[in-house]
Length: 435
Image (cartoon, rainbow, N blue to C red; front, side, top):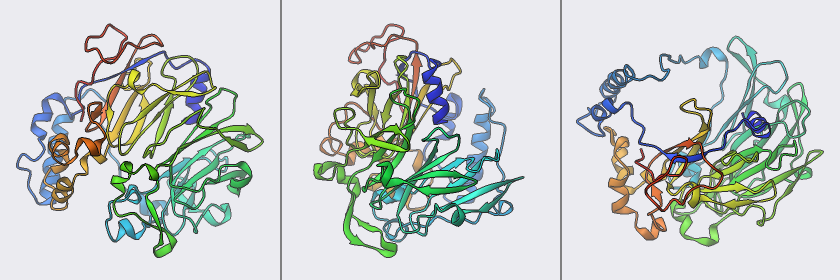
């Protein structure tokens, strides 16, 4: 997908666009009222799920979007036996710490047989690579591939062809274990080249973005670094025990950790770009790219799980400039996931952002610890405005406490000022509402 989007950008297939947040997503306008947050939902899980299923089917009946499909669990038949293991901070103690975000997964055809293989990531016990045998069957080739990383606390993974030799190389982020780059040797075998490639950063890394920011035909690398949420003490399995409350870490500037942009120099070498090219330091777990202003260069949207997101406009492949206020006058406060996609098939990439941390107030967590009778559907503002102070939020006038869907509109590369409510066609508007 990353490689495909880079090709789209280089060939000018990404339309010139501006971004406009649209109204809240719901099952349907008609179904939303019937799917109210608590609304007397039964506390018994089976009864509650059956009721929710009926409500969702009713709502789906009036949807125009394609939805008439279902999934069947074929894990046993697949042969995949991978099990993720969490560190004790979250698996045993339920500490409010960034370890609780879990781990990622990556899919690519690693051996050139035309079938997508799967790389599973675990905090403890090592990662696993499963080769697709066809017909829904897989085999574990971790040992022969050499990509287990049993001695590291891993977070995320991504496949990308870093050397343009036609196969998928592998990059893995870790918590203070050094990030890892594997060169694909062919036939499902890999060689670690992290140090010689110059990408073995040691810190609290998370999301991975491969994209060609300078249009030189080589995939560059952006690594999201969260922040220093661990102590020097070690726990079971060798992990670094987390600080007392990681979700207050953004109030401590000394815990900040700059995310890193690497330029691909060719010959499997990368160079870390200085802050003058891109300077982003926030509690960021993920990012994505798109050519937002239609100049042929990919721009970068970086999430912040504890504060404002940031949007960086690419300046001709030379550097990135923060243009968040101009393009996104409001962002979710505790964003965790995002996706550029064309939701309405108008040929322009839109943006959907998911928020998590603004829901994690003490009252919400305690409410959801019980039978959870619909509490996850309660609007965040009801809780956030009570517990989260302006000092904690570091100012909330430009924030959305929930998910956000931004629709692209045809426009110029110089958006109108977001401070005005009225907008001409092609300009930016204020958020109507959020999930």
